[in-house]
Image 1 (cartoon, rainbow, N blue to C red):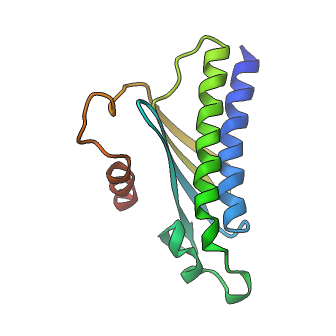
Image 2 (cartoon, rainbow, N blue to C red):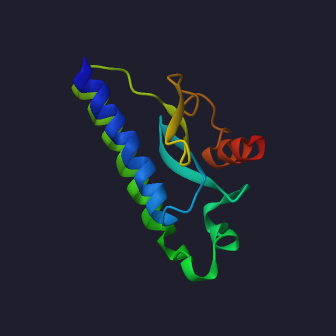
Length: 142
């Protein structure tokens, strides 16, 4: 039983590490939204110096001498999808149902992770439900 939880947590840690690497460890909080339903999606936003920002706007809140290469966004998202796929493989390997949606909030200052999962297949049931819109809705809530 412990092996499954350890491997599952490793995938989440990989997502967090990926997100931190993108902003060179300069975020206070990271918000990750991942989908593994009829489609795969991975997206994230940050809290930097009290400002909640999309990944393409992080440089507006970082010092000039530590700006990030915004062109790395596509690599960031692609690697995030790989983590989503790894999560599914781990769940299948242990005969577990995999989450169809995952909301992760990592607080870098407290080194704590808050996670919420859904196992309901919403995206295959609702053709008008779009990952981008659900992500934006969460961004606005935060």
